Image (spheres, chains in turn orange, purple):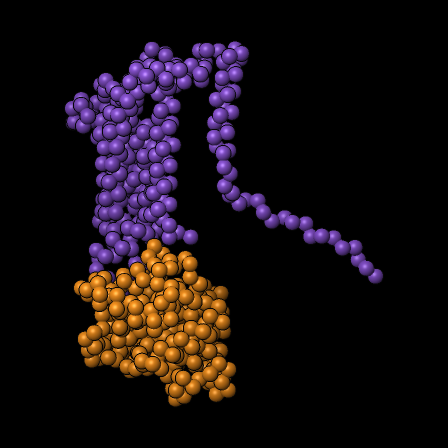
Length: 255
Length: 264
């Protein structure tokens, strides 16, 4: 299943946030959206999953999601959004309980995704007992449990320290390599974008417009930490964004 | 050239709540001993304060005559029935206000209008509405418990983490699931701390309720003693109310420890 943004614009009151954005999100690929702060990239992600309505334009779903897909458009949030009163297993069960699955089927799904995210030992821990990286792994496991057609990731690694971030990026690449998934990945971190993106969309400062789309052809599994070619791509992206980011920064000061 | 080495003075610490065992009971015992000493030596006249040992004797008589339970049981049942009705209705209305804008717009001003009414002032009205027997006593206690519970509950619902609710919506959970599995557990800490206050108010109103022609009950016992200026009996009754307050507070603390184990 593909997603498409068709001439999407958005206003918050008098503030224009997004202007005439047309983008394709082909299945089986990770599309990263980068841009200076306040450019409306999170708003764009909320629209893709139906949590916000654009002022103009349409969000289109092309093709039907696979039959075993419980929640086609599934988010992974920056702040994890785990229920603190449920264990890891309970948090995964939460999103399966409303789909009329038998208890055995639910257990099978939970056991499978816990194994895929290397969380099996932590099934009965409460979120407060887990580190930030572990919490985000639980959130990723929860997203995988509903077998999404598209994963919508809103700065999923931004709340983590840089070492944990590296580990989780490796995990995400491992997950994708074993079973390619479709994802839209919003971030302000260019290193994450060049590691994980098949396509990187650069947005301009507010009102957000598509400034450039960079396609990376190196397979995800071959992109290593500190790769020279990735470094060059990152430099290129930064050159595109630098002035915009500086202008966006100054703009905030003038409000 | 060697500079003198000074150890850096520790200036952290302080402002941290630490658990101190036995201090509460010590304060209590010291106060009672002080009263006992004062009344025995005559520093405090017998009219100002009854002697604690006399109060204890009165209490013993009350227990031995069997009157203690004759007074205590009806009071406890009034408290249980009235407070349960008030708390359940309060939680229900509080949830409605927290979940529906229409209920909020319609009921918040009403609750604000009801809250400051001294429920005791409405005694005659309650007698007319519910009769002179148990029902009017239940209603008075329930009414007094209701308003603080409503306010605590809707404030607690307002404080539930919005990102969790948005998470529930994004996973396509049913409305009912979001309320039962996300909103209600998330509001639990606030609801329980609200109950601490409203159940204490229920104990206060117990005495008021038993002004409504009750023959037996702690409130009735205190009122009788008060009208005779029998300070020993008055204090024996007051001590019972205090103990009830401490027990209610301990019970809620126990529930909190069980239900809110997930809290950091």
